[in-house]
Length: 173
Image: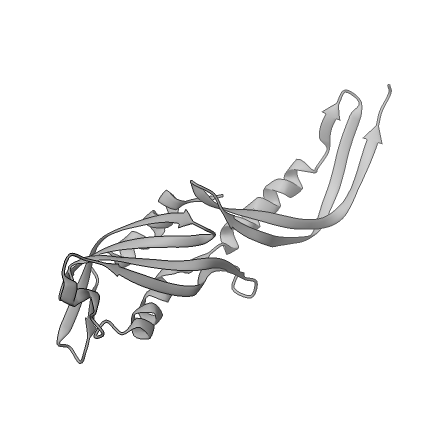
């Protein structure tokens, strides 16, 4: 479970007050605030901008898991501009592909430590786990992988696929 507030805390320190330059230095935008939430299976990041474009940019992307780096990233990233300035709405200087490419690295989150901790905790739980009086479960996790990512109203959630062995020990009944 990765709450949107936590994603915001991970992202804001590196993104807030950043200034980005476009159109050979003629146009700049600065990020003053951000918000994160899920909608229709996509992660939405609302960025408040000032500078050559004053308004809101809504980034959206589908959360995916990179097994090699054990990280979550947003695939199929896109954006939409909301501003009162009609001319800014047609601002082609905020080059779509360039802006998305600049933003994508800010929305990649390593899960390596969390996955290691979850596996260790699950393994510890499977060590002589008392089901009821006289009945104990022992297990060994052989394979532990993130299986699925999905969004809820409050957070990004993960399902895991776990393979291993388990034994049930029955003492005096």
